[in-house]
Amino acid sequence: MSNRPSGLGRGLGSLIPSKIKTEILPANSAVKPKEETVQQIDVDAIETNPHQPRTEFNHDALEELTNSIKEHGILQPLILTKIDGGYQLVAGERRLRAAKMLDLETVPAIVREIKDQQKLELALVENIQRQDLNPIEEAISYQRLMDEFSLTQDQVAKKVGKSRTVVTNLLRLLNLPTEVQKGLIDGKINYSTARVIAGLPDDQQLTFFNQVLKNDLTVRAVEGQAQKIAVKRHFRKSKDPDLRLKEETLEKALGTKVTIKKSGETGQIVIEFYSPSDLDDLINKINRSGFSV
Image (cartoon, rainbow, N blue to C red; front, side, top):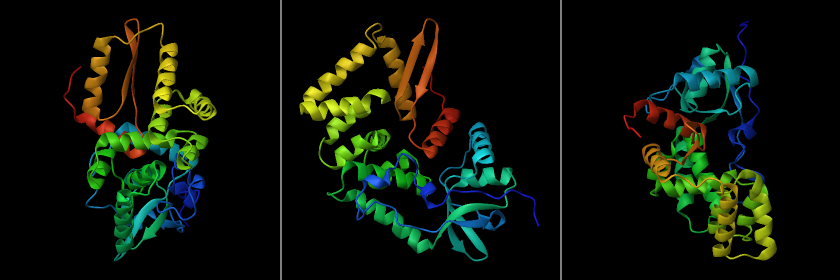
């Protein structure tokens, strides 16, 4: 018997990233993932997908994932399809590579028929086009496309025929507290208000949400109150126009929000990402870029 460690997983719930709070969705939601069985599949029986859109994998990011798997196991199952003689990978190439580096014997995976996998992608894209999806359901659809098909935000935007900005703004809603997301689903606040709340510091989002409900604020009033919070937090330092120009240059090059925090001659550059695949995409862009600030 092999002494290699097995690829431990936590079951189907691990397929849904923690930012997707499925408990707030109605049972009949069109975007709620259906129950599927997680199996332990022999690593040697899995072939990589020749159509994998991502061909470059950052070594440091892969090493970080490997260390995480070594300590916690594989927390999100791979997606496979059955082929003659084994399985083909649909999503999870970084996890598979890390498993091979760790000499794991098996990995947790969900196995789908190719036609079922194609149907699932088509169903998600079609659901996004529906007029009756609320913003949280639409955001979950985007997140599932990224997680279950190894797509980047740019690829999702092209697939559904929307701008990268639209996709990014909706995905940010998944970082909101559960109460705020549920408030949006229940119609207590609208999308514009939710977007304003998503732009606030994490520790103020729920408090601000409760104030909005208590005072029945309009969108314009919400924006005004949010601006006061922003000013109050940064009243000692106004943003240097040259620094903001550098942020915009980086945002244009990377396709995501960038914040430069400066203290004297030193500082930090904060680059936002919204999924593991999005992080990989950013790293690849940085590695390939020749842009200058």
